[in-house]
Length: 259
Ligand code: NAP
Image 1 (cartoon, rainbow, N blue to C red):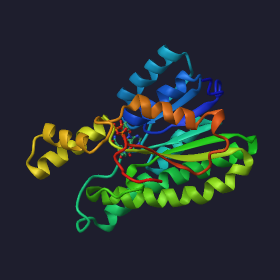
Image 2 (cartoon, protein in one colour):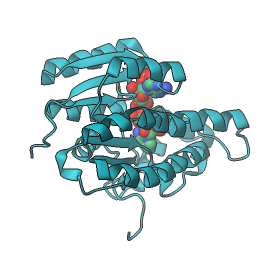
Image 3 (spheres, helix red, strand yellow):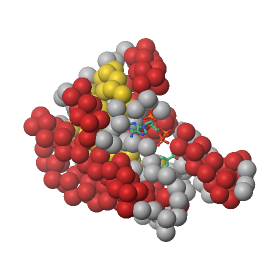
Image 4 (cartoon, helix red, strand yellow):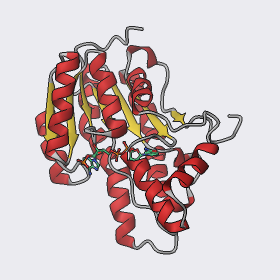
């Protein structure tokens, strides 16, 4: 299927690895020029070079912490005119509901709620003026069903989801489409980290934790960054003009419900 976005320009945040990288790859494959962000310059440059070589698109790499005001300013200055925005950042650490301090909550809200909101506030006006835009926010299955150890994620991402629900309907008349993409468990560094933390907390091996988590997924495996990226690219395509403010779950069937 031709996604109809060849020649567009996308900002993909937190995209040197994992799900962000999957999105950047699928967009690059569709002929989209990419502004790619992550904190670590080395991995970022490797990914940027790989995308240029494989897909022949223009890739601008900006090493910055997207969750800080200075980081966002640097990224937006390098980005210029953006048609497609994919928001993403690292997820908050696991823990217990009783342990988190105000500072922990502020950090999680900054990273997983206020950063995507600030990026949308910066880029939506230009998209609306030009009459076309796409935004995909990478959130989590935790907005549909809370994950006990990820209370900071449950809280921050649900706040973002509420903001998007209202905003998506306000920008849609100008040809701008915002949707959220909700990952279940995917085989990335984040999953390795969470499996490791659960293994320590429960005194089980990492393999035992992985087997148990896999058993809870009807597809009987973790998702891949490539299939996540392909869905993201579709949500950035010409074909989603009638899909407004939706929350698309990619979890291998793990959450059991009818609607
Ligand atoms: P990952 O494999 O750990 O990759 C994270 C990427 O984001 C890296 O490129 C990292 O590069 C970059 N990054 C992290 N913090 C950043 C920051 N402050 N500013 C700029 N770049 C940053 O993680 P992932 O699995 O792709 O997860 C992406 C998001 O989806 C996270 O918020 C995660 O919580 C959420 N999620 C993941 C899963 C899963 O199973 N994988 C499930 C549900 C939700 P640098 O470290 O160099 O900055």
